Figure 1 (cartoon, rainbow, N blue to C red):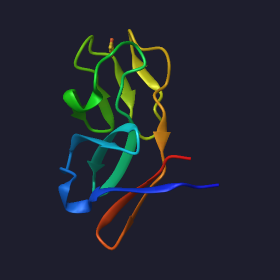
Figure 2 (tube, rainbow, N blue to C red):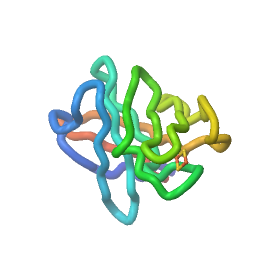
Figure 3 (cartoon, rainbow, N blue to C red):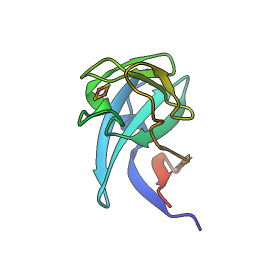
Length: 103
Ligand code: FES
């Protein structure tokens, strides 16, 4: 069953960049690339760093702590030292608002 959470306004998600949102006990990172919004867990799977403090290059988010990288589309690890995928979430835009399915 899906559990869509309204997280922010679409306009608030910076294009080709990352932002953090905290909602309903979740710490999420939101990304906008080519007008499409993506969502992942905000905490790196390697250590306690927030991906929203990292650097987005195309579809890759670089962790600010040890420069591990994830693909934001499916969460797969792209470079050492990260080996475990970061969770990704379905996103939809409705009425100018961003919804994330955290089920
Ligand atoms: Fe993210 Fe180490 S905490 S790469």
